[in-house]
Length: 141
Image 1 (cartoon, rainbow, N blue to C red):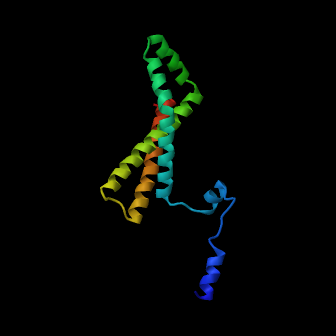
Image 2 (cartoon, rainbow, N blue to C red):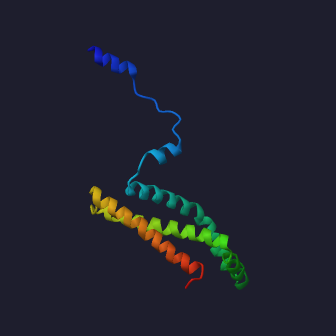
Image 3 (cartoon, rainbow, N blue to C red):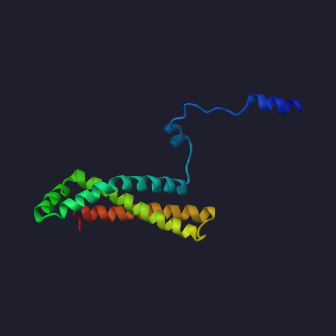
């Protein structure tokens, strides 16, 4: 073995320690497709966690007219509306990103520019749908 190879094997691989989440989020600029991918996973996880709670609330609200009116009163609270708005965003984003993935499974929009473009459209469409749902939820129309 040459001297350069021996020197390289002695050094080994560099070790990265104490990397914090702020280092990752502030030093690296992620492309829109990476952001959509991460948000797709986060929204799916959030919906999965909230599903038993939402099904329980649906079951309780369907028991009688009084239980429905009780839960309708709870939904009138601003804090509850904000939670529902967050769940609405999670559902809209997860659905639209899922449709994007279906198109990508059919070998459409796989090149870099098209993937970035569709990722931007997913972000925009999810925010627009959430805004419309928010306007309806807060009684604008």
